[in-house]
Image (tube, rainbow, N blue to C red; front, side, top):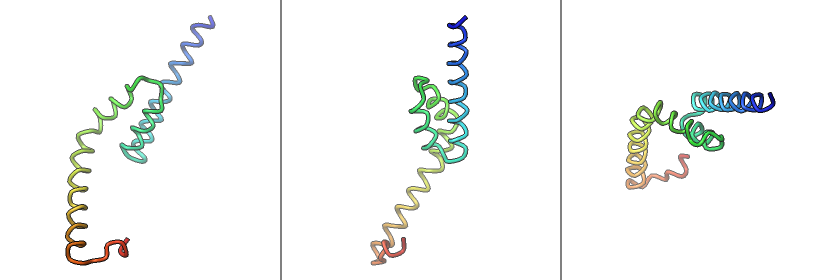
Length: 87
């Protein structure tokens, strides 16, 4: 009886961790969700599911935005603008 109860508690804990990872990802973004999933004890399954679910959309938006941001910063610095004072 104790073994089945312990297994039930472990399964519930894994389910709760998966829900927490999903909530963290939806609220704070993929980076936080991945960090949260690395702390869980599911062997990386939650990280894999997050990347499968959000990976393409995340990459399709974050990489172009980063490139645009770096390009704007480069142009500003190249034209003598003190970017540090703008921040």
